[in-house]
Image (cartoon, rainbow, N blue to C red):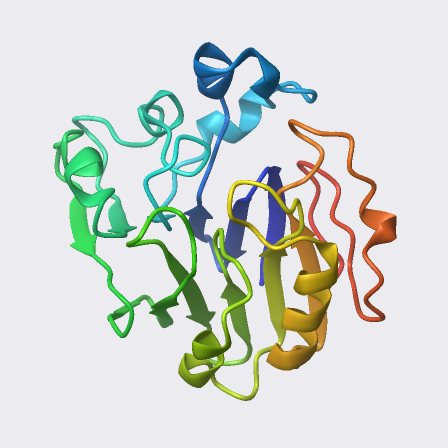
Length: 224
């Protein structure tokens, strides 16, 4: 699996020409609502030209479900499977077209082209927020979405997660670095990738003291 960080919580998964985009934020929409949320890293326009097969939106916050980004992928001519949390579901359906909109709640499973997507709980200010586990038949990748540390989440997780992608910014009802480190230890994944930093803030991910951490570089394929 080839995995690229798109900034904030956005990820691109690619396998055998099949593309999955999770929570893409490739605009300046947040700055329009709050000047403090101005991008510190420009949008890589190449990322907007990708033709995804699946898009996952873990919850209905603008830096995860952004109409100004999604309009590049969801058109009248596109045929994309969109896996979306409950509150975001009406928003993504507005794009119409020949796209397949799938409502994901904790426990929901969707399988396509050999990839299995399992929704799990998240503890966030958006009450229907979810995390997502992607199983490609070889490894399991857990994208927590925006979440706080909640012990109940662990009861929904498999024991053999290869990589966990989680927030470390400690604001907006997300884990801070200390709680994210504890969460990662409990998950027990072989790789831990900190997200949700560097776009709106000056956080230094090297302060994230996790032994198996892989610090991503924006718009670059990760070495996992």
